[in-house]
Image (cartoon, rainbow, N blue to C red; front, side):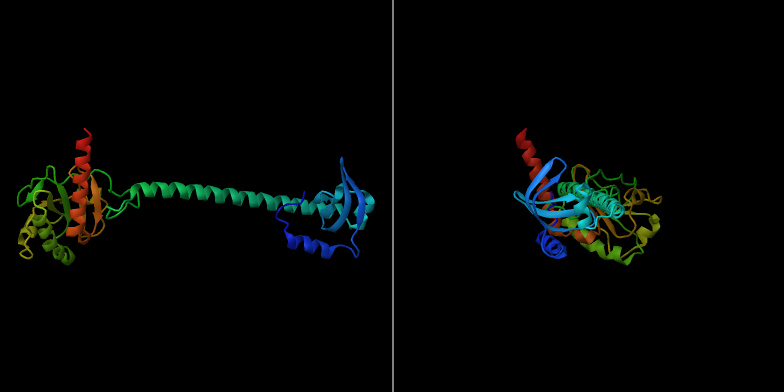
Amino acid sequence: MLRCVYGTAVVLALIASAPAGPLKLKTLQVGGRVYRDVTVLGANTTDIYFTHAEGIANVKLKYLNEQLQKRFNYDAQAATEAERQQAEDDARYQAALAEELAARARKAMRDAKNAALTSDLNLADPISDKSLLGKPAPSLPTRWVGGKPELADKFVLTFVWTPWSVPCRKQIPELNALQRRFAGKLAVVGVTTEPEEDVRAMEEPVMEFASALDPEAKLISAAAITSIPQALLTNPKGIVIFQGHPAVLNTNNVSALIQAFEGETAEREEER
């Protein structure tokens, strides 16, 4: 039967290409099938197209009798080549269609995965498997300038910095303010690869939080940090909920994260 891709325009083109005066046949037998009240619309290298008592159809010229084949200039070799080309075109189309469907399926899976990762409370979302978001934070160094702070049951804002960096020094007053604003719930800690004497030699701005010494850059390596200043914010369970520039962690954002965690904790306690 005629493929659905042959629309009205194609049928009209076939009529235009038909011999002068449409060929009409009372019957047309093709194999075991008999078509009645046939009006030929046109033909191409491989097929003849026609209407009949029950609709519209097309059949291969090679299946017609010799008289009709001659009328429509049937060339067996040309028809074979055309059919071969059509088969190749069809195979390419099916392959392209299969790839498109597979691509859609992959996109749907990615979209579902990304939707599960993100939320209105997120300050950032992971974009690679190397991201620490949603994973346990790397261990902090054990050497401290200013004494080891109390970190148990607190949000911990790890500030990766260095005394010679102007952008790092600009963030220190903001981090001091966060430490004061969320005292008891948030602990700000610095981590630097610079020597202790360089940290102590920095007079301004004054750091109101302790800083750990990481001369071997173990934390920087574990967090795949490539620029400073950098911040890691972990919840009281030690899970990283933010990784990026510390300027993002303003009072409103930190407050929202703390409230959300406290709300989830309260709900779990009620369920028990």
